[in-house]
Image (tube, rainbow, N blue to C red; front, side):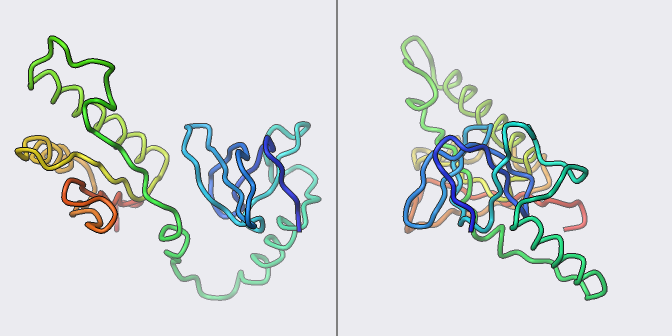
Length: 188
């Protein structure tokens, strides 16, 4: 098994994620992607990108035992039927976007409700497009309860994208959050 240390550049074997190890504890490796999002992985899901490599390439010398094992598994499974696995997507926690205005701006002095709503909606749109671009399957928008104006505007925004939305986990977020599932393929 490969050992990892804080500062290692790593890539996820079964995904397109790359990043830097920020923490190692209890058999879990916490990787921060180049976009600043932390994800937990077990050591057998990661491979170190050596400084000389700069990136993983299918044409470079493959000396990593995890990659060699993965390649031999895929070569032996070429003739077996393929099934879509959702285990990986379910393991990753959803991206969380807190839209409370005090998280988005230093001061609301001189702003009216319309200005604050515009800031919140711009942030929501930016984060949703980021998640779509980076193939992040689930995003939780934390909007709070209030009068429901932001929630209504979010639902209007979501109608413009190939997504499904629903109330987020009450246990984790309470009443003021909406979870969005982003379809990865137009056929979904």
